[in-house]
Length: 393
Image 1 (cartoon, rainbow, N blue to C red):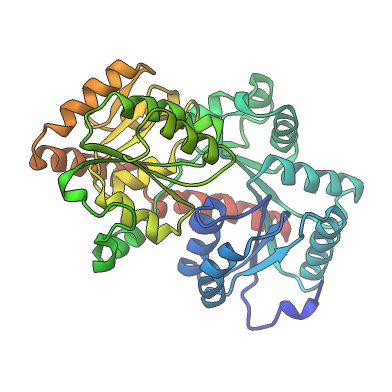
Image 2: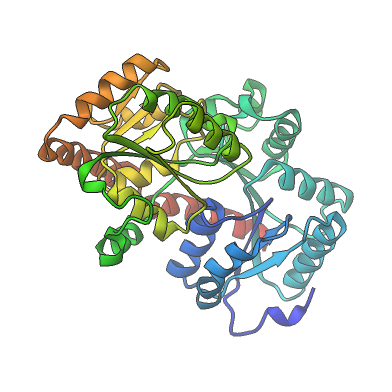
């Protein structure tokens, strides 16, 4: 690792973010690295990515990364490169007396880094923070092992909701109770407002006649946990003027397109594929109601973003969504996995006045402002970072 990357002009506080991969909607990159690089001038950020970064993602973030002075260290899926890159990086930082910490966001890469540190007998002090972004009980066996070991061996652990905290093994919560923190995921309200204020943000790419329709939207990876198949069945039983825009890609995308054809609703479903953050917000702004039928979530950033954009939301009855709903006074609709109940509620919403929908959206916006702002989230993380930097001295 080139020692010249640490110049005298750079601030002493270094944050090394370690992830498995990144995408245009990656929280570790957007809400953590890029946000802090923009708003915290005394920090220098590096992000270590184990898997290759696709060209589309690079194109989207090339300008931002350069302007914020963020460096991406790609490992191209090579385990040896991962180990040597991190070791060389930390060694160079310590030789130059930099305050440094490592923030881990993924069970697999966290496990790899911890194994490396156990082998090296922690030759260089590296304070580590591990963030639990999802529900432990839904993890694969490998991810459970990685998370469990991270909870035991990292200096600090944060959970993005009380639901994800309570899903952790009781023994781990008992052993590390003083090192465990609950910090709610935050939304960049200022950034969202800037995009919403842009005239271009009011143009939809995928629905030319939105004024004549009642438009539902959902932003998800096309994977089993998001339960998108359920939404297609709901749409089948709704009137023809109600449409659904599905933003995101994933392994199940071809199957979902086939299901839409089989249900004879493919003319009412708009599959956008993967979009930039700006394009996602543009689509949400054009929608009437945001919906999500996830089986499980860590908290639900896409839902919070839709709420920040002043949209009514209809959500599945899972603990993280109920946790969000408790912050409000009935504006968030959380219902069981029952197609009939979903169709009744959505039909009712489609018959409401624009003023009523706007009132629901404004109430949702207030919930985000009061409880889920990115500014508030990072004020809490800054306290943990300060503690960890002091450990590295």
